[in-house]
Image (tube, rainbow, N blue to C red; front, side, top):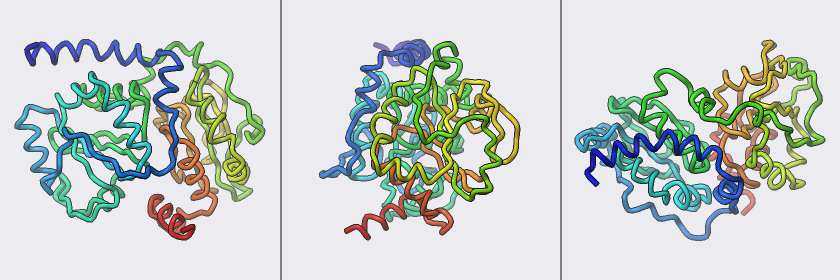
Length: 345
């Protein structure tokens, strides 16, 4: 097929694919997000079509533009990352996604522990490690999308099901980021709210309404807000797997824990004392994945969030990081996790 016709075909197909995939059966979704997240025994090998940086992202971008592409994507990963492996096995093994990605971008790989110097598109120099911290690539794989002017316009942190990654690609490529957030973009492709407002998984550690979170600041604990939705297989898996383990529950019970349906008009007073609804708060926080867990300190400031697929080791690590207040020591999450591994060894 002629390249221009192929490109047009992909463009016409993508909007439908994004919508249809969001309504795909649970077995397909479960297959992509169910895996063991223990550290891999063998190091990952990048797909052979990944690009190696020339050391200067401005030069990498020039090469991509010369090839008629829309920009570049920087990939931040780890050599023994189970989430990275799953990204390779699912999203990057999907022929449509791979073709669309290669048509519009050069994907340049970095190791978040790498020491090589890289010049960013603004001319600043950082090691691979420093660059990952600059873009808050706490969870691998993380992707930073640069447009053809060299501006970072979008970031994904963590592993998502292929349909969500496919949507992110279209969101950036079609430049929807110029007029709406990713959560707003996805909301237009979601099934009706009737389905999304179904029952949520009840747990004993969730606080009961009314949700006056400002009053919780007095107890000095961190607060974890679970944004979920009805008919959510990923939410069900979160509760039946990582949140079913004693170690996770022990950490969760040290916090104030709230569960909200991200599509509901449930009244909420935020930690900052702002009266809103669950739906509007989720939108203001640009929550686009269910389930997402947003962690706040005792003063109501966001510490970090888990808004991608998370199994036991990743979730427990974040809970432990928050409860130990490691963020107050100005320690990056990945550095802290490395310290914990060295201590345990």
